[in-house]
Length: 354
Image (cartoon, rainbow, N blue to C red):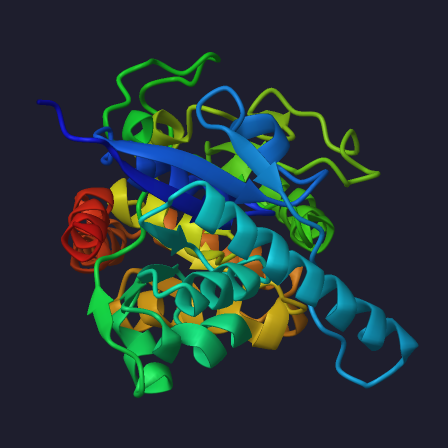
């Protein structure tokens, strides 16, 4: 007789930083029957339905001050908790896996109210408010960085790294555009949030790099009004690029924000970087992420308010023209890279759920 597959509800919503690790983990749970919990009009509407049944709830983060809006959010939260509880009960799910964010709170509470196990993954060095509040309620909190452990003393923590999609690890597809073989390449990853300030600095600094023979591949995001302000034969610009594995492997250096997902990709491809944390990220968590890489020797970190185009131009040029420091940074990325994170996390879920 064949065994009934274990039914798992994955609660992951909003940004690629929450969704991609969850999708990568799900790929290692092919023997599970997986359904997804998300929020309407977010990225999961594009990425999830072709792979897993998607359920949506309307929930949002709490405001700092008590107001009528806060009361509406609380009412919405209570309704979402009841919806998730009903879904888990009627769907006969064995447990919940979540990657944090505000969708995790009703999912964790609903599961625990039914006596179901929960695994939570936290990718940031400074755990989010939901992770800090609800981590002790979970059977295990899987961490992207060991630096998170002191913030979660009451939770059962396991360091597994942050999963990336299997096509990232196994990528052999060539770049879809031409880069000469014998030139240094700088890849700029502004990210979907706050890219405009970094983009401006890079466009002002880039002529110095061009004179030194470098090429720049600039991923600007979708929100830059000055995206066409720079034209040069050694400058390639686009909002995003799918084949990041091949691009980062080709890069000599990255200039980047420090979201956990981007840092994971930089580590796995052993790409040294200059990191400029997004200054308006919740609780400045990107600075905590960046500092992990700086302490390992894998990156240089500059706060946006302290960085000028001239300073950025000179620091990048120094690294491109100094093989030894650049090689040391490249080697240091290996100390923060976890290539089997999705497998580790999948095994942890399997241990708890079975």
